Every structure is written in C-alpha cells, then in structure tokens.
Image 1 (cartoon, one colour):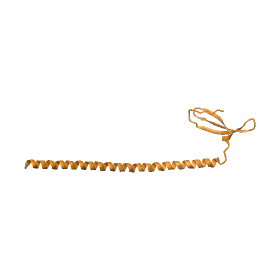
Image 2: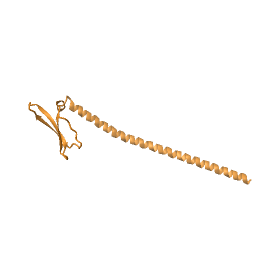
Image 3: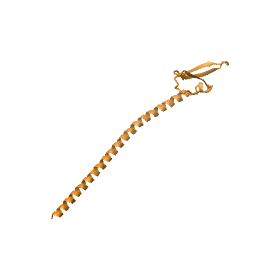
Image 4: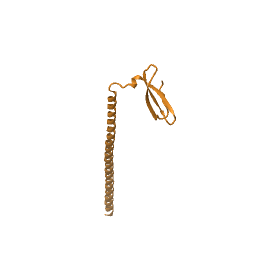
Length: 126
C-alpha cells in the first residue's frame, strides 16, 4: 500500500493488528483528520512493527540527550543575553566617556579662544 500525505493536519492515529488469510499477523496504521474526514490506511512493514534489541532504551537515551540539549540551549541563551547586556553597557559607558572628552576638548578650545581674544584686546588697548 502506498503512503499518502495529506495537506491537512493529522488529528487521528491508530494502530491495529489483523490476521490475513495465511494466518499471519499484520500491523496496520490508520491516520487522518477528523475535520475533513480523510482517512489513510498503511500496512506497517514487518521490520518496523517489531522492536529491535534495546530499541526502547536507545530511544529513551535519545530523548534524554535531546532534553539536555534543550536545557543547554535555554541556559546558553540566558548567558548570551547577559553577556550582550554587559557589552551594551560597556559600549554605552565608552560612548559617554568619548562624548565627555569631546565636550571637555571643545570647552578647553573655547576657553583658549576666549583667553587669546582677551589677550588680543589687551594688546590693542595698550
């Protein structure tokens, strides 16, 4: 039986064992969506219907590792956000210091101009 893919979301899933004419057990999978009434029936191959040796423990280990990865990613996002915030603060401080330095340089230049102008006026008056 071919496996068809529906365009709507699967909302129903059921496995069923049936005996065929040769008295051999076959596993079928029924899936579909309950809203549009689409139902597909798929005969599960024998190699997929029986679990392999240690398959359950392998799957459990897989999910444990995935959970660990998800936790790590969540923790890493938090630390990266904190590092980014610290970097932003450092950049803000640096910008503020540069602006203050620029303003003090402008103030010093203005003061120098005023003092030179005062000296020039004094020269003219004497």
